[in-house]
Image (cartoon, rainbow, N blue to C red):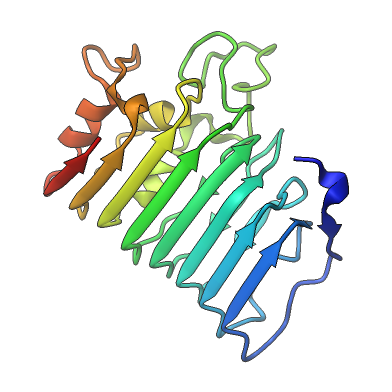
Length: 221
């Protein structure tokens, strides 16, 4: 994404007691703008064709629906997403590193697509923790080598769609953190999940998801 074409917002958070819905497009976000602690009524946030390269955190305790389409994130660190009351999530990572999703206990449905998370690729073909100091994709990224980036944050949802290109390692690395999808009933996956991995012997990511979704009712590939 050419960030020179984006509008760069200032470093002041939005403050509104009555704002319920916010839609933003073609924005270059900074570190403070997406702190919605001063927007206690905000429930719907939609962002498209934007860059989070200068944003450490997206934070809202009131948000119910979050949509991020065709947007890029940070290269050397991860943007943290803190939305504990979120019900619906749609996230499309167009480039750089996938954001780190914190716990979402109220989540009902989530759609995630890692179409070109180009910095989440291990140069040594490992699942994201090769310990090679020359591998800028793996080594000491935001201290997340021992933490789940995406799947743990989604583990309480009921409906889940997970799409990834074959080169990205985040989903596969997250599998080793052993999240249990205790509420998951409907799951949609692409071909990424049907390819065997070395991380867990004799298991495909699909097999892992099935074993860790005890009440799953419907699977679509």
